[in-house]
Length: 462
Image: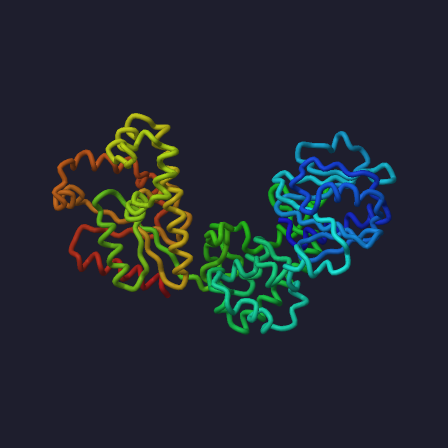
């Protein structure tokens, strides 16, 4: 954000106010904003007249009187304001402002300070960085074969393919989700595997969405506005982005969200052919692992949160991070599980912080597991599902229950049965039981248990 429509909207607004004006002064408040020589930038832009504005992908271009060009990429939060009064508009977010020859000011504001500017000769500008890395905009792509050629050797997922500005310019996170939703394509499918028909749909839908958004002034999401006091209206038309856990407008299925390359990705599992995911939870010794194995025997891809934690405790990078944050649970450079338990029992603040760090790592591993297996049903055992607030990450939540906890703990030769039964209170299972989509009762034979699992599997795999 801003994406192509928001930049186009900003361009249209600025054209009415600054074309024909001359930069009479420049004040760089955040030097990293300028990507070309900073002293040359300040010297050469003064006394240059703005002849016109243009746009390439998500870049805004000020075409100046000496055949030079000011190229701007706004990244996440950048925007321009044209104002008459400087002082009330000179906030801590302002990273640069221009004095204009009519006494007004052109302010660049960027709360995240990720935006960049280049002052460059106009000649050959599309053959040099950064614009040489900007590909065709969707409506300029000649045919589906062009897109297939761009992706043929790429190992990234198609969601990242749509964000690759060299392959297709102008789409960001919002409109990539929308294009994939309209095209009925899984965001997790490898870009190199998309078909000719899928490429054709992506080109058309990307074009349609961007043009619709331009007509509506772009999207105003969270704090972003294309200009001071100006809001877009496209956010009211979005069918995928920002709709996690809401019903799909097309089929009524619950929309889901995963992360691809760190970017939140919202999709409809039914419309976009992503196989459902299952979270198994329940109290201690209820038979969750047994049920997980049964789902695996039916062809599901499976994982266990406990196994992931076990693996994390062997991972040197994670252990280094953990020791920096929680040195009190390490003894002679090694993680001591007894010290973890001791600190958890005596210090609630430590417990919350420690669990947050570990659960965050587990969520990342499970996110990767699910998107890598998007074309299979994934079943994951997560004993503390509700406490870790992971239930919304799964298509279905299944509880495994039994009246025989003491018996099953006895089978494990457990020497602290009562203590382990008290752990049930910390799982938050009972107070969240109403959120379960299915309940499996593990009170009879293995055959009966398998019959329940198979029945659920058949129902969700249709």
